[in-house]
Amino acid sequence: MALVPYVENPLPALSKLHNSSARFHFANRDLQLAQDWRKLGVAAVVWDAAVVMCMYLELGKVDLKEKRVIELGAGTGLVGIVAALLGARVTITDREPALDFLSANVKANLPPDCQLQGSVVVSELSWGEGLERYPAGGFDLVLGADIVYLEDTFTPLLDTLEHLCSDASVVLLACKIRYKRDTDFLGMLKGRFTVQEVHYDKQRDIHVYKSWKLVPPKRDL
Image (cartoon, rainbow, N blue to C red; front, top):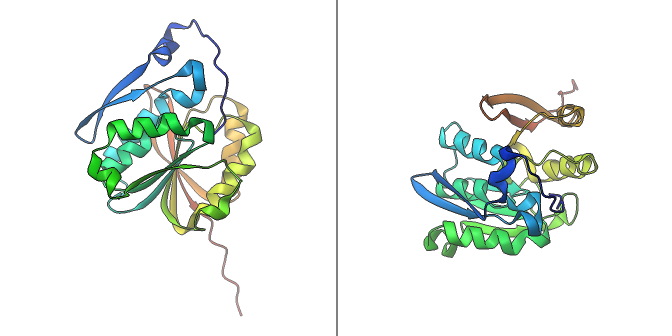
């Protein structure tokens, strides 16, 4: 996750990002996520990619019950919260400046038993740094919504995905394909993972990609 400073944007289509909260209904619960664009920029608003990711998770095409899940660049925490409500054991991560804000959203939107049982943890993670604090190959599912937008983060992000994933892990990324750099990232991802588009939300122009580690070919002895 990269914290980007607040810049006032007068476009009507972006006015919802300046609201102090955003409301949703997922996993049979009403959710209210605080937003704070002025303080944390892109890290503190709910983007369409997160909404589409939650909609995809609700389709039930990914088994979440008791699965070890980690969300990268969580921002407001919507995706991780919904994954937890759907039965996953979730580690919700972002960079240190966003953690208090993220933790407050998690606390406000998850039932106390979810938090007390340790099925949800909020944790600091800067991609490519301190990865030894997270078990290598320790997660069944890695989630990321609209986290592909800064070229400088692409290699650390890929290194992080490789560290977190075992050969059996799945990565789900939801994103817009806005610029050449976005397709460049997909090319880089395909160098390390098998990549398949599994969902497209035409209304919001959001793609969901499923990825898993490339399996090296067996050598004849």
